[in-house]
Length: 169
Image 1: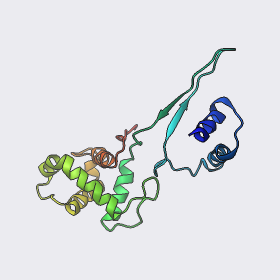
Image 2: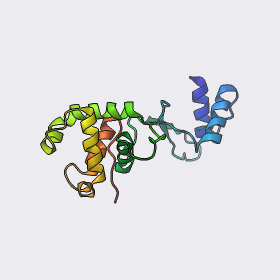
Image 3: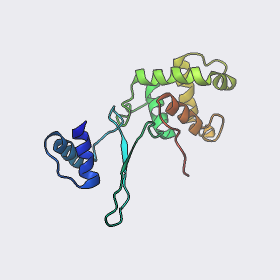
Image 4: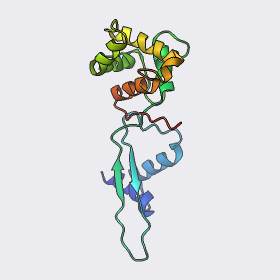
């Protein structure tokens, strides 16, 4: 615990560190471009404000509990791969597989079955849902249809424990 605290103080208070804390700082400094906080590590934001001369400041650390939502393009690609499309599953950030896609589909069916069957009453199984989702993602008319690509992507984000993706266009 104190090694983590010292590593944080290195960045917030410019303190010198040794031992395990130094190893953490060196790893963070040299691997920040390859760091993947989505594979089980804790993701946090350190909030600092500048202090007036002689004023003490308490820094804050905010732990991120929800991961950012992934785009419709991310989910479109992985649903297409599941259905035999070209390419391979995305390796970053989630390392998808047939098993993860089926798990998401199961959760989506449990949460959105009524919406899905109102669109297509024959979608009852995980495989049928993933086929249905693939067709929707490939059909440009569904970009703005019901469900839209964004809504479908956010069903996957919800199933993956992520926040909704917000389209900024």
